[in-house]
Image (tube, rainbow, N blue to C red; front, side, top):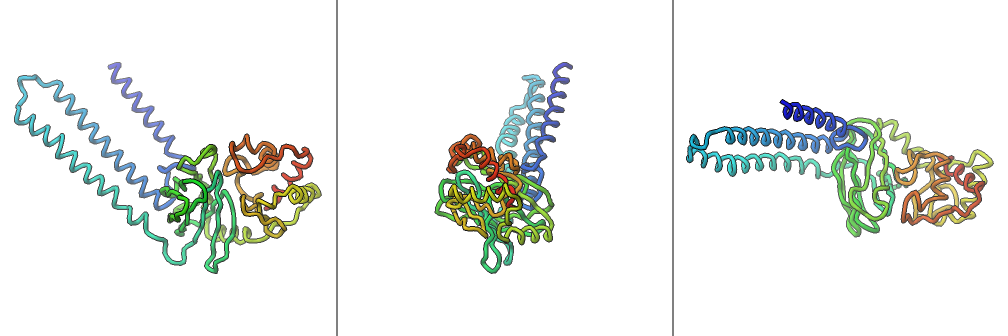
Length: 331
């Protein structure tokens, strides 16, 4: 009785743990995209099949253990060994394999003509994002992706340094980003919300600090957001922000970063034209606030170890706050 109670309690805790782990903005089992729905269905089918097989094996084990040795029929035992040990597993695995491979043509199919095209470059340790229009123009962003619900989006993926892996678990599968080779992934969001993407391939010291928010919205909201992102940077609205714009120029930030509408035209680091409107800083590791900008500028190497951006802790506190006010106002 005690063992039964312990087993029952373990099952309850396992069930509770499973329910909790299947939710959240980065769960492949809380699908918000057509590809993720396929993957989740395969997972649950495989889990159900494994559970059934486990129950049958346990029942057969109990049955065999309780039978008297003299009552066993050698022919029936041979039939059980051959049938249960070879034929049934082969058929079960074949059926599961067919079921698991069936969605691959759907998941790998190209997006329909006229679909949204987004170029994403995985770099150590951030994401360069370009939204391309049908006219060939591009809107440069970084560390954030937004998509319209119900519309397929084709991602063109590449990397200039090491192998990364682009993955938004709630929307679909993952695809490696390989230096010297272009890969592709089509995702179709099925519901609105904010999700989390990440690099799923170890790419160096700050691999774990390379996330990005993904916002899925209605088509009208998405088009309005993209039109705003295509505009040049806004003029600083306060004296502190104006001083920050001067500090941005004087300290050579424009050599690495671009701010459209100003003389800053660097392409080494992220485009900062509308950095103040993004949901996070440093590739999903800091909130987008003026205080977080100060922390990022003065402790860059501690916030993200081995980052390629230099640290500006030598600047006076007043200048750091001015820079933070300028960047935070770039909406």
